[in-house]
Image 1 (cartoon, helix red, strand yellow):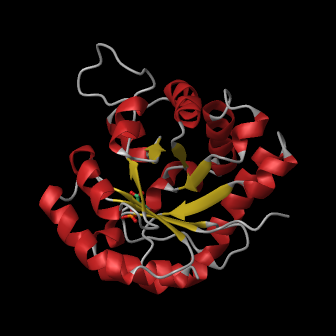
Image 2 (cartoon, rainbow, N blue to C red):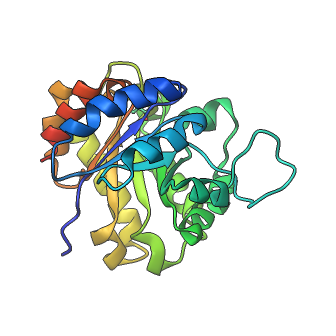
Image 3 (cartoon, rainbow, N blue to C red):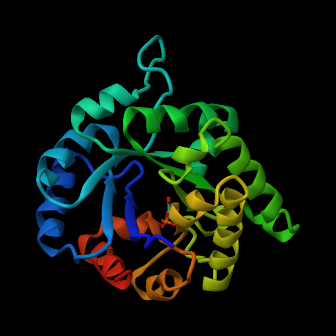
Amino acid sequence: MPERAPILAANWKMHKTVSETEEFLDEFLGNVPDGPEVVICPPFLALGAAVARCADGPVRVAAQNMHEEAEGAFTGEVSAPMLLELGVDGVILGHSERRQYFAESDEALARKVPVALDAGLEPILCVGENEAQRDSDETEGILTRQIEADLANVGEERLGDVVIAYEPIWAIGTGRTATPEQAQEAIALIRGLVEARSGEAAAAIRVLYGGSVKPDNAGELLSQPDVDGALVGGASLDPGDFAAIIDAAR
Ligand code: PEP
C-alpha cells in the first residue's frame, strides 16, 4: 500500500492583491512546517508573484480554475498552457462556487480534468453535496454522480494522479464543519468509487476534506484514515492559521 503524502491547499478565492500575496508569502514561507505538501491557490493576477516568491522552495502554486481549450474566443478565461508558462503546477477544478455561480458543469469538468493532467497540471477536483441533499440522504448519489462524470475521461493509469477534495457545500465558509466521522465516511466512499475502476489508483489517490477547517479542528479531521489533507478557504488567508493547520497534518 503506497504511503500517501498529505496535501494542504490554500484556496484564497477572490482574496489578496499581488502585494498582499507577497506580504503573506514573506511571512509564511519562513514558517512552513516540514512534511505535508503545501499548495497556495491565489487569484489569477497574483499567480506570477506567488510563483516567483515560491521558486526553489517546497511550496507549490495552483490556479483556481482553467478553460479546457488551449486558446480561443473565450473572453475572461485562462488556459493550461498559460498557467504552465507562468510556472503554476496545479489547478482547482469544479469548486462548488464555480458550479453554483458560474454554471460549471460535470460535462465541462469531464473535459477539463484530462486536459489538466495531460498538460502536467495537478488537478484538485472538488465534489460535495449541499445541505438539502445531505438532509434527504442523497450524499452518496451526488458524490457517485460527480466522481463518475468528472473522471469519465481519465484513464485508469492516470486516476491516481488526480487530487479530489470532498467539500460538503453546507460546510464551506459557514463555520459548520463536517464531523471527522462524516468526512471519513464520505471520503471512504469516494475512494471506493475510484477502487471500482482501479485498486492501484484508489490506494494512491489523495482525497482531501474541505469546509471550515481551522487550526482547532484540523487535527481531528486530518487524523481520519482516508483523509489525505485539506483544502482550506478562510483560515488559509492568515499565514499563522494556515501554518498551524499544516502543523496539525504532521
Ligand atoms: C473552500 O472554499 O474550498 C473552503 C473549504 O472554504 P472554507 O475553509 O472557508 O470553508
